[in-house]
Image 1 (cartoon, helix red, strand yellow):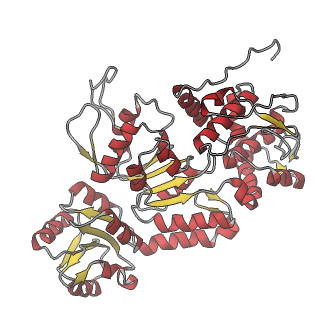
Image 2 (spheres, one colour; image 1 turned 60 degrees about the horizontal axis):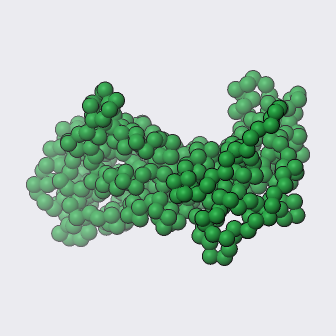
Image 3 (cartoon, helix red, strand yellow; image 1 turned 90 degrees about the vertical axis):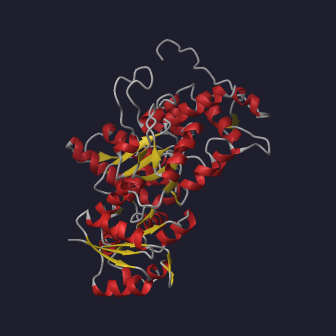
Length: 491
């Protein structure tokens, strides 16, 4: 049977924990101070150590400060005096989780069900790191460049804890893949990993989708519905594009993160939740706060462990590896083996990849389809000389636009890109905000591509869904979104 050690100076609290843990088929020992705890550990190494902070002869953190003492024990902070700062400190020192007194049975059961020796987790990470040079990947992530090795180090440190992770990076850099890798290296790996794109769900339905609803709670609610928090119980909930979540729902999410409880829509009974939250955004977080897209208090609650993904242009050394990885997957799926020529690889490395890894994968798929024979050359690959995207998507040389500078946010929709040495561009006055610049560029690019949203999104390096979300925002703010021009016959 697994063995637990409860370190708590409160006899009643220690007795209660002992009874709860024994009911989960554990043997349990109790220590009321640090000295007794060290003695108990020397007698029998516990599989899990439930550790109070305030003890008669010192702070419980002192046990965590001795890695040899608890190297083979999963440490869970269990205290009535925990705050966010203290909990984060304990987690950084090696604690796997923390529980607030009075301990909730459901949360305790979740912690006990996920016991894994720290040494086992560390060995798994060490194997991935040791094989990186040969395999070229770490979990679901591919790349050997210095920026990616930094990402791997961050994932290694945070995966074994219960800390909330906040992933930032441009669209297409692989934020969901990072979240999946964190989950797969965590103690929650045997439980669900659910990904929710907050920008892809209707604002009228997102609360019901996340928290669930009761039968009859609104028109069309003909049955009870479990939300993502219930379906991901014991696992990981990945909230992608968190800045697209309505502000009123962000308030409710913050409450769940602080209390560990939520209510279905139409219910008056709160439920406990046991999920790890990983959030992501392709916006700059503090700019999202200043523009009213993200609550500042929610940012601080989510941003305990930030991971910032580099764009593909900043790790160009990984492009050949990624391209060959995607090509191998396509060849296996289609049953025909093809390979890149050296010139094709050179073209891929030279291209700036505004759509990042997602665009690279799409380019490889397209080149595979268009290739003649078993060799893929640079004919159907994007070129760094293309003004607006991939060469196979049509030439831009026939586009002629009037030079019209941007003067004020209210006129952004009417501004048209400037032609400078044949390259379409826009101008902005000094003092324009990043949000104003983004809107000007997005609307101008949309006009340049004759309202073709797919090409606009690819040129901007964002997802089509993100483009639709931004255009909806601009229309709500009163901006005039350029209309698609009338199509001529044959087009």
